[in-house]
Amino acid sequence: MGLVWSISRDQILHVCERRYYFQYLAPARINSRDPMLKEIAFLRKVTNIPMWKGKAFHSIVAEFLGRIYQGHKISLIEVSKRHIKQMENQWNSSKKITEVGKLSKSIYNSQQTDIILLEHFYQEDLPQNSLGSAIQDVESWIDRFAIWIKKENIERAILKSSEAWIEPPTYGSESIGFEIDGIQVMTKVDLAILDSQGSFIIFDWKTSVPIGQPMYGITQPEFQAAVYQLWPNLKFDKPLNRISAHFLYLGSELPKEHSFQLDENMKEYTLSLIRRSISRMKYFHQIHHDNLQLTLDGMLHLTLNDLNFAYTEKSCIYCPFKGICRRELGI
Image (cartoon, rainbow, N blue to C red; front, side):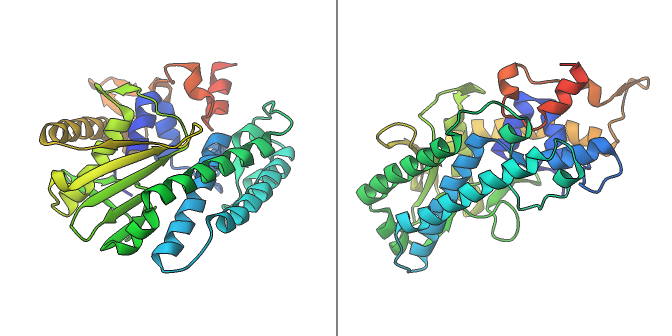
């Protein structure tokens, strides 16, 4: 696959060049003869508990809204119960797989569908009731989401829509996005509705509380919302005043909705940020295609060892590849 841009890829490259290489560029395969590539391929399957909980929540909501869109009557609690049971099975499977040994043949041969939790793999100390706590978090998010969709009458909005996109896949014919200078930009929205009046309404579910972390002079949510709104504007030529983005935060007792509206100035600024990020990604992809041997001034060679580590140790906490870096640094 050629160069693809997304917010998550941009964030990873911004935080840690090595992680970007491990996640997206290394020609890693589980059956690779190279032990390092074999290890990288395995670690790509590892996910941390916060991400795992978030994915469980998003899966529940996506299935529920998808069934509603298809005209089925179904309870959110009913869908939730099946996914909670799946979480229990995944937790137990992860513990069983990782108890065998960190890099054993048994782990490498685990199924692609198996969930392997980072905290289990690195044998980190977890509170005794970590599974129960994780399930309780997901159930709390679902309860708050149920309150919000009832208040905002989201089910009716979906049924009355001209078209709806419910957590579309990242890749394939049903994925969504747009192109900038020939580069595909992926937009992973949780829900998008085209209503009967021709307005585009985009939603994103956040299992956290609102955080305003500056990035490129704007907060990360502002940047994300702007990128999402570029999709209907550039793909379907929808005017900006008919597009809105809404982020629902579920990390506190009451759901909090933040709305964003893109104007022409912010559109051009966002496009410039994406182009700048793509330019940097192209540099690293060129290194990759040259087998990490990019000649500089005809004499120097840039290799994996020259790629930057994360700026802070905090960035490494949930990184699946941290074991490789620790080993190289002797820590």
